[in-house]
Image 1: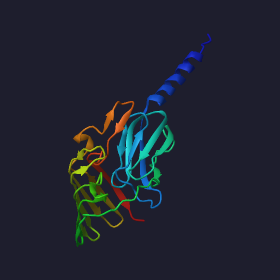
Image 2 (image 1 turned 30 degrees about the vertical axis):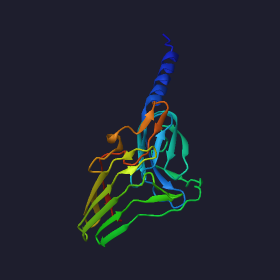
Image 3 (image 1 turned 90 degrees about the vertical axis):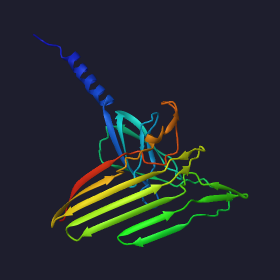
Image 4 (image 1 turned 180 degrees about the vertical axis):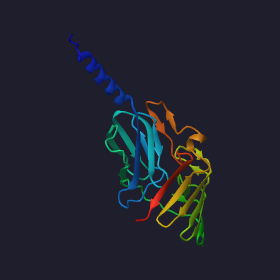
Length: 254
């Protein structure tokens, strides 16, 4: 008896192709300044044609989940930088973090006179540092405008304790006050807290890092886009989009 396996083979190929197409993938990238290679916090990465996106953290790192298989275009943007697009085929052959560099925008403003009401008061007492930064304004033709996405006040405090060769503990706190947005609205103030602890032995150490302990996310304040899902218009991103994050690891000394 001869069994025709051709239909089964086609069915198996179709099943594998379907699983690849509808599989949900994760994209990881670090967005940096093209000239300085410094990470860009609060830059955005969005899958074109969707509202699936995220903003980078303070280290320029961003993660997008639930990306369908196949060719997708990821758009990277940051205020003051040119928008970058990359076409990628998912699943990616390399699961490592991709490095994306953005060039500063070549657009220029007309002649303006800039006067600053910014006051910098810094208290440095190592290992603790506290910094206060006031609001910046722009004066043009005798009229004053508050610079969009510039909070009236920001406060940062970082404290580090270290018992040499045994422990390292760090705490950080950042406050951002209300700030005007480009659409005329006003962003909400928020606190971001973080903590780090590391236990050190002779040849290795174990660490844990907690970010955004207050679980601040702009999506908790309201929607980050207007329009439809197929044609979204994104609002200004002024607060984190990632919530509470914990990462841990082991470091070896060779």
